[in-house]
Length: 117
Image 1 (tube, helix red, strand yellow):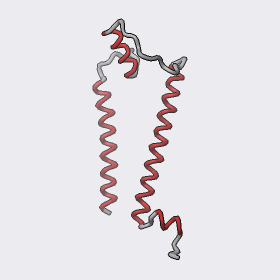
Image 2 (image 1 turned 45 degrees about the horizontal axis):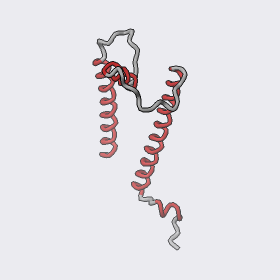
Image 3 (image 1 turned 135 degrees about the horizontal axis):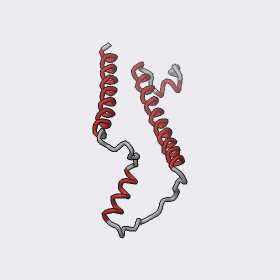
Image 4 (image 1 turned 60 degrees about the horizontal axis):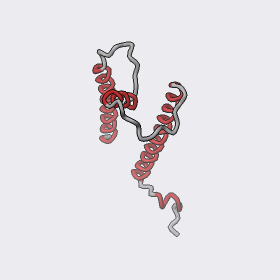
């Protein structure tokens, strides 16, 4: 019972932290112009370098440059989905391992069965 209470508190704390981070980021960006578009850090860094060092030449070029912003957004979404899938799989595997260890089932005995001979 104590374990469930602790797990509930951790979940509630994480949800509160997530809402706080979202709210803080919206509050900090409250004075931004409404017509400004969101750009990533790569674009912001490139613009800063070009402004501060006009003669700068990049060391290498991109291997692949998407033809439109929609393609770039789609590729980014696919990358995020793949990362979430890997994270979810790992989290599920760890949860299952912990669940089996709490029941007293080890990997060796479950693979061989219950026979000792």
